[in-house]
Image: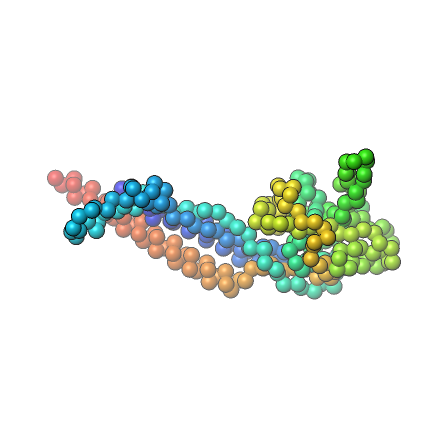
Length: 277
């Protein structure tokens, strides 16, 4: 009966893949969305316990020797982890002066109720107080100004980094390095950060990321990401490709289901036959 857990473990892992692909397809039109994928790992007795546990007879082999399972009845498949594909999405023109698209590996820095997060979504609006924020109310941040006191470096409070547009301003211009100009006066520079290891970021929701490592930031002077005003970055999901992957994953899931049903049928027949004696 324990043999049935081998295909069931594969079925559970495959369901995770189906769910991940389905989520990618659902976000194919979500601005700035980065698709996810999962990695499987097969756990074999021979790999976890070493070669000494593999029973290979040192003799002249007979046909029955080829029926050794070598611990395969204890094997299982599991999801080894998931990862986000950070490849560039296509830039789409909107002509909205508060839409900003990033070209490169950088992220916008935004202030959320849970703290600073990082985002590729460049659709912003100006709220009633003049602050530039995304559709969830997360405020866009400008680069921090360093305040020195003695030998220690201190930075201005986070509230001073909110990008606020004064009233009755007719023209807002953002250059490719992120500098924001009100008419001809520079208001600040949008904070765009790059990371040494993108895969160290943790996804929060569909479009926000958390960085837990202080040493993961690249120096600002090494940033190669450009800001494009009047554009937004589309999702990097290829809907056709993901649909093909989803069909393949569904078929794989169904094949495993058939194997489970066969195991179940064999066990049921064995129990019924034994009951006759």
